[in-house]
View (cartoon, one colour):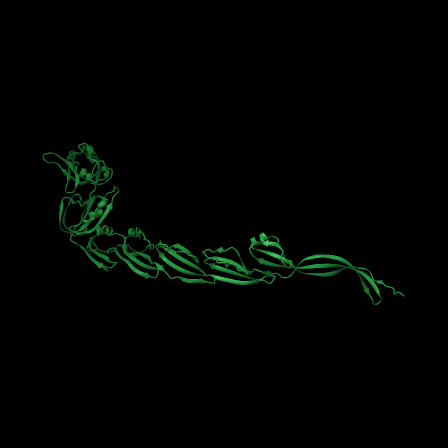
Length: 550
């Protein structure tokens, strides 16, 4: 009967026409149970109303489903979602006409409820093979796994379906949950009697263990539905059809191995890093996509998982984990020269940065890098200065020897004091980065004799003289000479305390010495060493012949 022809059912199974038989809490199923009826359903329209109620439950539903929301009884609303347990027609109960009786239970099923099970599509298969397709409707999606677990023994010894008892041993050919648009789940079970499946294994106990199931004598009209029921990612199947018997022999292979893990196999070992590899076999596609390597603690590095398809719808994930080993290498000399030397000390995979202390003459430099293990890689360069001394003598223009001393990388500045015969001069010391000092001083004799120099040409005069010539004849001429008087000056340095000579002022010394200037700790005395004269020809007259006197 087409859905559009349920006119009598839609009129008579209206919610406001439902009567109330009982409302109670069924302790066996731990659920509220509502029993209601429609007395107006009689023998004439019973079949139509019963079919309609099995598909739609109530006239309030516009599409086929096995539940109703906010049902009514005696015009009272019972809030919530109520699932169908049973529709029955009892034309005369206790002397009264009860019409169509309906049992509802509140909410979706969370356990296996055989009194709610139905024969799907009315399929009761041929007696020779005794197949039956059972449906458990209105299951709570969150409870599907636990409901299926109640059927996981693969067989059962008798059951009652829609009031009909089926005895003997029944084999569950397949169990498949189907999620409906209303959010509920229908669990479909294909059962067979006698047991016609034969199960064997390939590669039993290994990561690629396969379950091989032989289904013999499957009726032709059910072969496709049986094959569809085995259609699971990774499974494969073959079938052969016998035209004489009208049955199909089917073979299905599926990866039946449990998820296998092999953890922390040491696959590499070195002085700084050790490597461990873990293998995860028989992952589903969803598990492979959601695979999480976790968070690596400090000192570890987890590589991205390598996920490979291993066949039969299964995947293998491989994870490589590296563990860093703390290393401290002895210092080695990397540079050496007369001024200093350098050593390098290497620290790898350190939790903390090593402490270094610089002292006078030792300068530590540090290169720090955070590596991929969240540990520190440290290079410590230690530069140790070497004390050195350079001494050289310089002769000044007057022939006096000045002894210079340059000292480098010294822990302190030590300039010698002057003596009675020597004086000392110095430049400002220089402090190096490592706390040592460079400084320069020189030692000179307290009396320094300067070479004689022409300091001042005192004066000149003109002198006319007559120059005579007697060859080839006697004659004369007048000659003008410029006469120079030259004073030769020597300077001599005396070292003594400045205050004494400042008090003395301009002092005249024996031998004609005269103090001319004062310096911070000395004065210069100059004295004349000698006087000399010279003359230059300035002008001459012409020669004049002299007549001999007779």
